[in-house]
Image (cartoon, rainbow, N blue to C red):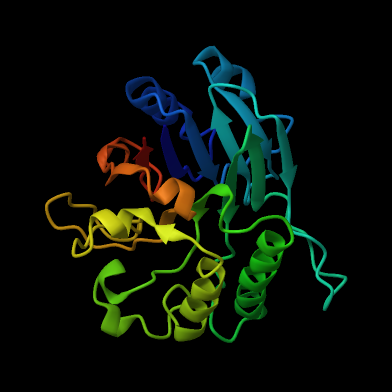
Length: 261
């Protein structure tokens, strides 16, 4: 079983890159984030022509998640549960998709970036991780077969970002964001890329504001594939595919791939 995750940063703008990658790599499942398309204009027909069904929710210009699969999902739900501490908080259906394929559950999330440490969206980000953990606890245990994929907007460790000493107050590396992230991971997930590449500094996000040089990479590892123990024990390989980031008009992210036996 091969699964990939990719923040495409507008599926319509990156459709040619995405379709070419799907044709060349043929994953069984692919999680997309920041599709930036309403459901009415999501390119489901084009994907189906290339052999992929899609479970998706989106909105104009922002957010958007989709789970692509060779066979249609048995069921799919979107969004967090209502927040018992803030009933007015949105459930964010364009940030979370959960699809079931038999006894396999695939969770695709686009976690809020947070904007700035003193911005209300940063507090919202921290609470989002807590709500995600509650969402998981209400439905599953670590004995279930779950893959959690997506752009999670946190670099876990110093190795996961270039020059971490300059990022301590960045919303994607601040200690509170990292702690909130770890509490969600503690549900029972394994970071499969880091398992296979414990000392490798490689990245899934490269800011548009800096020239991209494949020979001198400067970026962030903020896109992940996590697996619960029943799947982590069957891990065969993981890789970051830098190819799409080298294409004309690319996303600022690039795909992460994992293969399970």
